[in-house]
Image 1 (spheres, rainbow, N blue to C red):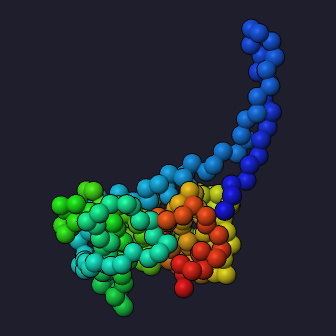
Image 2: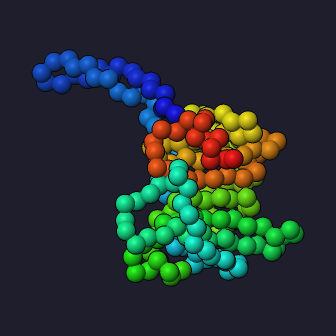
Image 3: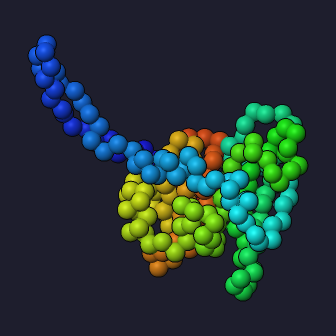
Length: 192
C-alpha cells in the first residue's frame, strides 16, 4: 500500500532573498506508525495477565518476519479467558532466541503477531475490539486496503488486518512481516 503524497509549496524569506521549498502537507499518520511499531508493551501485558496461559513452540509462517539469528524459535502464547462462555482465546506469537528462549520472562523476545478475537483492557491501545470503523479512521486515517469483510493498514513491514462486522471491529491481526510489499494477495494468503 502506498501512502498518498500531497505536497504544498511554502515560501520562505531569509536574508539572502526568496526560497521556495516543498513541504509534505499530509505527513504519514503518526498514530498509525507508532501503533504498528509497538502495538503493546509485551512484557507489561504478560505481567498484568492473571488469566490462564498456554504456551507452545510453533513454526513461523513464510510471511512472518524472520530475524537472522541462530538458536531461535517461534513461540505462541494463548491467553485464555473464561469470563464469558464459550472460552475465549487471544494469541500472541513471538520470536525467541538466546538463553531465555524457554522462559516466560524474556525481555529479548520479538513480537511477531497478535491474533485478537476478544476485548481485553490489558491490551491498552491495542484494545480495538468493538471500535467502529469511524473511530478507526479517526485514529489511524483512511489510507487502508479495503477487504471483503474488513480493512488493512500497513507501514513498512507491519500490517494491521481488521475484520469488521456491522462496521465494528470483530477481530484483528497485527503481523510483523518478512516483506514491505503488502498487497491484497498477501493479505488473502494471511487470512486463509
